[in-house]
Image (cartoon, rainbow, N blue to C red; front, side):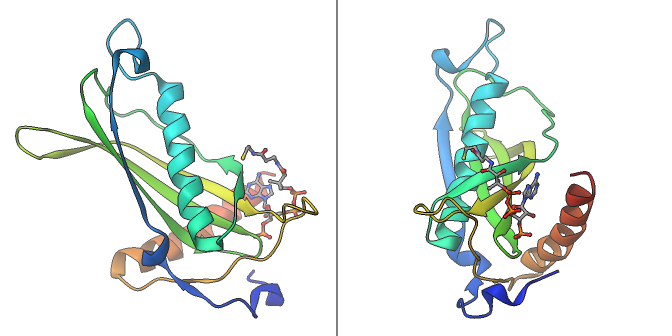
Length: 162
Ligand SMILES: CC(C)(COP(=O)(O)OP(=O)(O)OC[C@H]1O[C@@H](n2cnc3c(N)ncnc32)[C@H](O)[C@@H]1OP(=O)(O)O)[C@@H](O)C(=O)NCCC(=O)NCCS
């Protein structure tokens, strides 16, 4: 349920907090097979999601939960990786962000989807350490509207397991 706590905060467009990060896979990022370490990718996913949440809330947020993360295809040494993060929906004191990871083929420009993750971030008051309300999200495009709708179902599933 969306609480009345955030009624006084100005709603923000989904497009205003979008984040795009690029990474170039270097030897220190890989295992002995020349594949990107899973932990490194999880770190970048967390950072990309956190930046989108922070942009939406104009405040630093903490990671509360990361949903299932699947590694569909290996990312290799020398690959160029693009992480796209956006806030899918805002609730009371938390937001769901989605992060999409793609490898960019330098020669063709083709983008290969390798991972997707959903993360929940909570807006925290630095002084009190308590959770505080977040602005509501305005989805505009059909894709943003779809993500907004689906985020509520994921939240219900997530919180029912808590
Ligand atoms: C995240 C945290 C603040 C939640 O604390 P809490 O006591 O459950 O807080 P509240 O009951 O006030 O709930 C705050 C929000 O967190 C959400 N939340 C809490 N646990 C959650 C979980 N496992 N998954 C999804 N959302 C969760 C609640 O639904 C609520 O959101 P809402 O207001 O939009 O409904 C607390 O567990 C924490 O500080 N964890 C450590 C965070 C951290 O260090 N992360 C890594 C570094 S950033």
